[in-house]
Image (cartoon, rainbow over all chains, first blue to last red; front, side, top):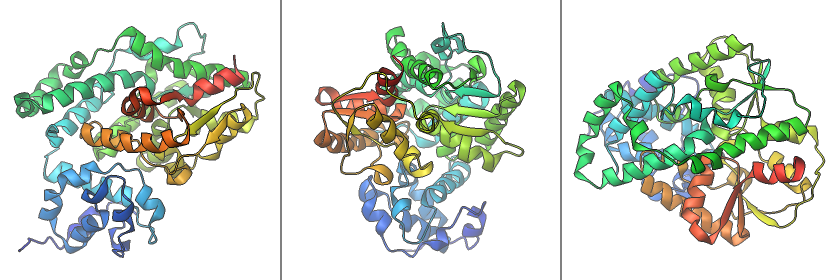
Length: 101
Length: 319
């Protein structure tokens, strides 16, 4: 499977000091603890950001908007990833690039 | 099937931009709770509802319509609906709760008024200038629309000389206290939840209550704003025995409400999981957020009773 990469994606999304997808060490606590179950995997979304896989993020629209922003994952994240704010940033990105809002 | 995500976000964002609320309701409805309370207009300290409790019966109605539309061929016309909604407030026709239903939610800010007065707090309110905070637009990533709206709210505070805002629900508290300072210049309003104000005042209960309740912490109060002990302190001093569910305090489990506008079925499934935990703790549940209240009540049906915390507190401290 091939994927188009936008090497500047992480930079484009880095709108504030809050966005820190690169702090994720892919340990999986967020995925294990998410009340929404296996559909929502913040670590996978953040990996797409770091790899510049914009089309994969666009394909995960329902996942991105299904997040409750409840911060259960953030509360238990050992790396201090701002998961809720990172997800909100992805929403802002999708709003502009996919929905044209 | 859910409605098209982009179109739903578009409608909500258009409403906030054009009509100052994601779901516009008439000012006379939003301010109905103030009737007969003799609250001063404006002042340095105001009670601010952010219209959250007043909006809930409308949101409930709209979600039901959304669910029906999602299952029909009309779902394909949501994009067209967004265009029409820019000219005519379509959402206002879609949700029309009864006066009785609205009165139920209006009771919460009324409870808070009596509690604050009992605690000796002097405050006014902003009546029709008490605007929605923009919480849903923020959650959905509609940042430009939110920033524009936050400037409106800031202008309202400046117009009325507001320095301290007392909030009721967690979402308005979080927006005004933690989000607005990140999007506004020169925003210096102090924001406190009424639960924090009351807990600090150390009110004595006039009527000791009894019984056990399962306390549902709001994610936003607990994890965003660190409000965990205040509701416990107030309920315990009121004589209520608190039974914590499996997930509690900073580890609370979400009611599902935040995804209700886009994915009502997912919200309901999450609420059902939470009700199970709460029911195992006690037959009566206490909430402190209108979204939690409505989601959990709907999921519980007749199997569990929920009340907003202000009802217990008013009964104990200000009746």
